[in-house]
Image: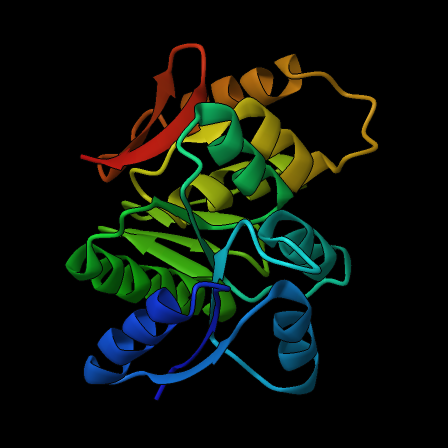
Length: 223
């Protein structure tokens, strides 16, 4: 049974989220602020964190930033009343995996939780399968249609990131931070160059394509 931690300072919402997830078969623990969530995650194993943004003592952005800086890779769904693009972008940049805006549709939350947990399992297995295409992280290999292509590290990491979340848009800045790191001297054009190289090498692939979201970034779409 998957274990989920909820960090939400609104007691009514916290209990509502917990009740819904428990009814859907999850083992759920809830806390009232980011500091307690951090302690829980350091002391216990959880498959997923659902975190509010505005919380006392330690907000959701800072909580996720600390987790990622300490190489704690728990999937994070951020829930907030902040509905501006910059707020959502910041949530992804600090390391969250999903973002929902209040008021929350509970049925949608359950669907997104299930999808996020499936994605996490894929990443833990270090293998992504899209149709007949298999991406193997340990060898940086893409296998499709009887062909096996070994990619350079950065190219593979970009493709693996996009392919792990089909349909999800990643900004150029997200990809730069996730693949090259905060302190990289490379600029955003580096991402574009790697995408073009991937497209050329995978031009015969019939399972997916890398789509440009003009002015934003990229996503992988199943054909």
